[in-house]
Amino acid sequence: MRRALALAILLTVAKPALALTLLTAAKFGRFDGAAPSAIVRVGPDSALRAIDPTCPTTSSLRFALSRRGADFEDHGEISLACAGWRRTRAGYRWIAPEGSDAGVQRIRLGRRGLTVHAGGTGFTPIVGPVAYVEAWLTVGDERYLVRLQNFRRNDPDAIVSRRASRVAAAGEAAFWDTVWADDPRPDDALRLLQRAVKRDPKDGRSQFLLGMLRLYRSSTACAEFDFAHLCDAAKAEGLAAVEPLDRAVPLLANDTRIAGFRAAATYAAGYVQGDADRLARGLNLIDEAVAANTLFNAFDLFAVVAPVEPGMGDYYQTRVLPLVDAIFSGENLSCPETLPEICSNAGMAPHNFEGTLILLGDIYAKGGRLANASLWYSIARGTGRTTGYRYQAIAEERVAMVADRVARYEDDDPTNDPPLLGGGGGSCRYCHNK
View 1 (cartoon, rainbow, N blue to C red):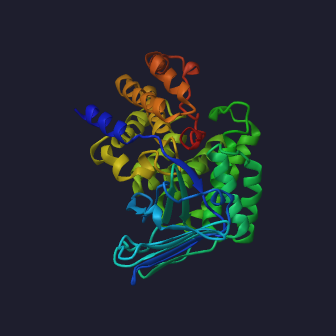
View 2: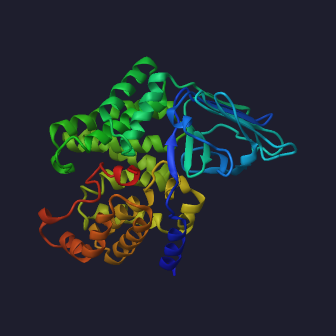
View 3: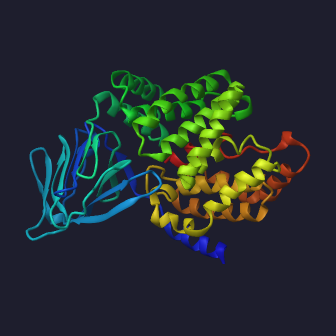
């Protein structure tokens, strides 16, 4: 019954996501809780110049937020009547129809950027403190996202973001172009983010992205990624990830996920450097992060601890596998609907669903759980066939070879054990690449 329910829920919500464009230039947001209102602005972006939101194109606006990184508060899609759009010299303007109480008041869109004003009786207040706030503008088949995570005020009366510097905005854009595989430019992203944190060490978002970029680069620095036999360049990138993530944790203290990434980077650096003290600290940090946000931060343990622990060993059987079981049990079965940015393809990981299920299938296979591995591999394969998943060949291979995979883990020859997806820290591309 549980398997049937899981299959029904997961296949229902794992739909192909609309195209996604991130807007970073000069982004700013202010959200007043006492007199509910919101202003969101971004600066000029070439992506905004080609938009025509007038009829018959459909458009909508949505605000969403997370308070601790383990939750998701969706304020719902607000339809924007296409007849409300008017051309201007700089682009387009939308004004709410007379008598409307939907909560959006006016929007300006075009070569000068994007400005959204919301408020009134129909506006759902955005009340702090928060981990992040998002504004999503959908026009036709494209979603435009403004994500705010650095704040100079963040309390029940008001949330006011810190205006992104030009170099920080460019660094964030280059980071996501790389991780999404839209226009990979990891060297540009590194240079820009390093400049951003040098200019403003309190820019928690740039510190976080710099640490994550280092982890990403560690997975691409060698000809082949093998966590147990990394090249020197990969080791150096992984070690360099720790410091910016250490700095990001207190700067983005409301987001419990940041501590999880820091923990994984610490553990991975300890492992590849042969540093027993750092390794032990990393494992302790992982345990703390999982306790604070089990659903999300369990994947930090899955990414760096599960690949190196013996599948039939006590730690794997009593710690790793029970965590995977928890992901697929109880209220988590409805997670793709209740927490879509974490458990489906609705957020900034366009193939989160497919990559996650392959990884968890791999973890089950390594632990000798053939039936579990077969189930989740099959769902990943079925989903990927409908979403244009670029790593679909991996899902097909996993389904075809699952019994052989389990047998290789269970025999007495550790040299023939296949690596988990990503090999130990390199799994982000399988969810984030478009």
